Length: 248
Image (cartoon, rainbow, N blue to C red):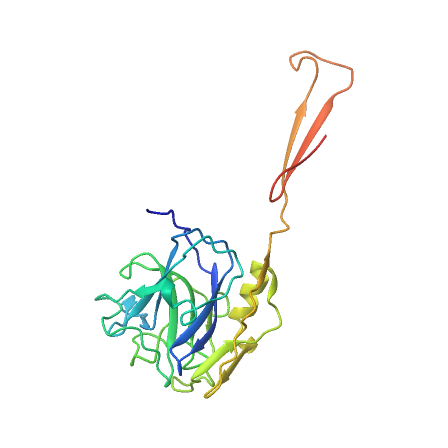
């Protein structure tokens, strides 16, 4: 039975950890995911010059097994039954194999020939590479993403080989508005790197509803709006915020 997917935009999920020593990563959706929603994760670097994946590597596809609430942590290892191979000629057919010499995990929806990137992390440097990527350990910033906004380069230093084997978000913000969580996770100063250990968050995040209130205002004159009326006029205000609240 086919299910409708949740279309995702940049920043709708965050990757909160990459463990190259044990071939693992963790991610958190910042919006609810409908059953059957698909997200592809690849370690194939992005080539800024040719505007395509470098290729020669691989990918896995996550399929939401049920309605997944915003804030729920998913792990490639722990939730392995929800992942399937997504290798192809664009990302590569060698399988996703995270390198302890530095690597990247890029999340996207759509086809690998025209991906819509959602979030990205790389562990080989504190900077994304420019132009052509020289090796499988490198990546340019994926198209449509912003470093520090919806992508994080979390290596040891600025050089292309200044890597950590493992890195994870260790900031204090794990609850609040999605925009606050996204900003915190995309800030590489909130990450910890290590060449032996890996200690990502395992307790689900709490994503609060937006505090924006959509206000509509209507004026109703009684008994007849087509004539001048000098009596009482009733004004109706309707407030809507994750449900409905009406006040007259």
